[in-house]
Image (cartoon, rainbow over all chains, first blue to last red; front, side, top):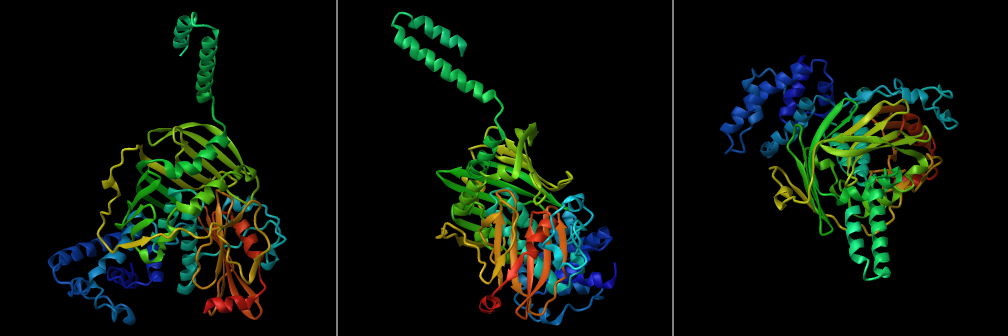
Length: 192
Length: 344
């Protein structure tokens, strides 16, 4: 685990990590390392958090950083400047997002398959008279694949919003009851 | 049954033939009913029950949902009482959160809740009714077949296969509980038979004795409560100003539109699967062209130039990548100005 990932992890504890960084972290090959690091910090945080429950103004996250040797870089400035007043709920969204991702063992993007490896794609024999927009594609060729991990932050933001909106609609729409809920929570909780 | 009939018959000999006839008719009727119970129901029967059962069954349980590499589980309690649906959903993994709903009132405590628009989480209400009736023509696009009995989460179920009749959509397998028709397991499968998405109750109790206390919020956290106004328009009109869709797979009809922030979106459903089409001015961002998949969900993105303006076209849905691509390729923007007004 390199420093950049640790920095992200640290930032997540403070609810300051941007989504792209979180995605990078979650696609890190050594998830066990990430998990154990997270758990160590979590323990420290819990200790400190219990000791300071009465005082909302204590910046627990900064304390955690110091306690853990202070070797981490400051999180991005603009976010840091908005921290006052956020301490109360800092532990909630970030921890929620990360534990959901780590405990369940998926990260955003981890479930994405290459679009052209599936039999369904290869067999899907769509008449492709409409496909001339993709220059290199001829009839029967697999659909061009886009690795979502390769998208930049803005692009990812865009795509994840579409995913969520579709899931939301689907939870209302398809009359599938719980499946719709599942798609929705899956889309919103995966650290997107 | 036969015993009873015989007994009645012997007693009825004296009062006369008319009463005997009535009893005979009754006996035949009852016997006929009984036989119908034992004869295997056909697939259409189960399809008809699917929609209403989702709302009108009372149950509690835990289900898992897997797509791609993701697995998540949720606890659910669902009660249908005096025509009102009450529901409590609790994600079982990671974050504490829950959705509690009573009729039109919803309280939502969810991680990243800011992104979930409550009025769109709700699977019931006017929209659900509309969709339930849309389940009817499903057999035009899918070949329904009963493929046997099974047991899921302790309940006897009937397994229903809905094989796509063309390659524009995925096939679905549904497991329905026998006495209520409740959906307890489902698969979305590719034409090659690969399971792309998996939903299944791992524990389930279908019961009418759900107490009020099971529908109380227990998670501490930021709560968002909202009163869901009844939808005034019964037909969800697609927002497609300024662009047209030249092609959509047969059987997909416009459905409730997702709400896209700056652009225009429209959704289609064939009763089982759904996809959404988003068209937005692209501003500064460039998007790659191509498809990505997670489980049964495909995202197909492309750029489109119309009248010196770049647009994103994105198709998201539980459809094969090729279908998504064909839909995306058929989008034509004929009035770029319509977006300009909307985008600001």
